[in-house]
Length: 223
Image (cartoon, rainbow, N blue to C red):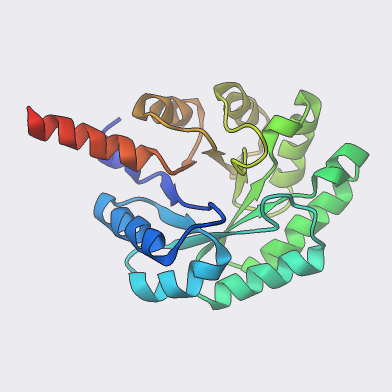
């Protein structure tokens, strides 16, 4: 895959708790320059970033992040606030306690509620694969498939593990047609990024792919 085509699948991400506005500006500038899918940033920076980008790149943000155990009401409020501030894509974390308790219907209803707020805006559902059994991952593929969400996403990057090739392949085998996959967390190299896409990922959440491209460009210029 051509590097420019790969970059079109990237949510260029900065979600560290100490992320500053100059760092967010730099992320936005890089995102526009490299033609990524979106910038994924903390909710508190959404309004400033949306104004700064002025429609040149979609802003993605996170809700219920990173633990997922806030109430459905709070997640819906967060989503509405983010959209009003200019976000175009929402990545939400599911309630993992409900997974461990087998409350599948509750999880599905919560996703539907947040999607109701998002409307035509893209909703990605983070299931935090590193904390799940294979059976739970397969069950969540079914739950998210029936929820109206646009994507199922592997990881927050804060749960102790990120995307794996095995998890993306498992998701691809068990989601229903129409649901897309976002691999996120720990994707550092262009080779790994391309492999995730080959296995069925449609979007990549990463802070390091753009850096890898920049390093490649520097090496080519030096030669």
